[in-house]
Length: 360
Image 1 (cartoon, rainbow, N blue to C red):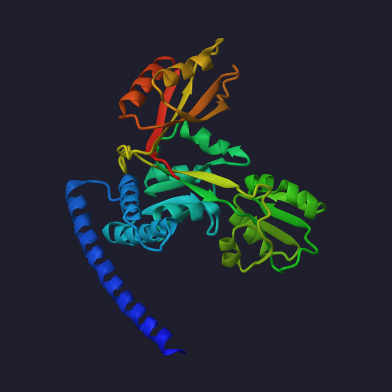
Image 2 (image 1 turned 180 degrees about the horizontal axis):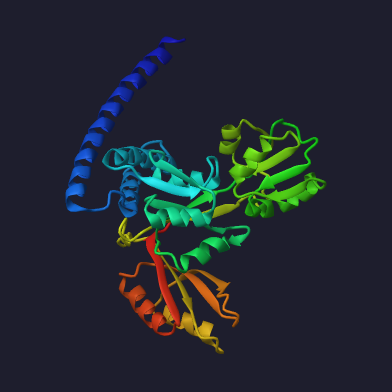
């Protein structure tokens, strides 16, 4: 090793010790913050506060670190400090190794208590019953569209949305060997099977396809039989000791899934406006000519942009529908408040699902 390299490593070691001292200094202040929050009864986790801290640090960055990397570093720092204030229990579609788990870690950081659930219904139940502080559920995929079960559960749930995160989804074919020879069956969540159907048809036309409760469960099943394969993440491969027989087999190279972070109002009330917010609601209208068009009039009148509009059958037998709408802005903003007031007057059913900082 050259003397120049040795000197640089000594310098890095010294900086690491300075960083450690500063991180512990921050952690001690965070513990004091936690004591104040306990006395005042205020929420320990505030997604709007996390977003503002990260944005402030990113804006002050003048060095070679990339802004995305700074966000990841600070999210972990804040997650570790929050764990000193209070344990945050997060429910998600499990088992370990799912994209839902990855989304939870991306939003909260790794210093959380994991509550893996067998279904999206169970995630909602865990957050609604208080056995978890928060739930993370998939709501939309760029290839396959909405996750209908999540939308349906929002209708009667006491939970509301306090945050969102978007995840680039890369599906991999996993099995006990690195070869693609001799694969008789492929197991994965129905959404993953749909997102990879063209690849599977082209490369494994004779393999049967089987729906699993999650991609991680598909990977677990693949670990029990050498003739089976699963579609899942690299994290799941490590979790179940599998080889990656094929990388990135999703039909859409830019496949993304959007996840909602949900909780009870008493856990965290609607976050205040951050300046870059999304408001989600579900409505229904009387089945009459022009009814859907009328829903859009208040939005146009008050200059509110709509970023999503999805319909789901009401299952009433009358061809009625619920409409799920995402708007840019926060209900406390004057133009959004005016639009929502007029919109509500047109609806037979009206429910704000949440207002929260929008993900990038």
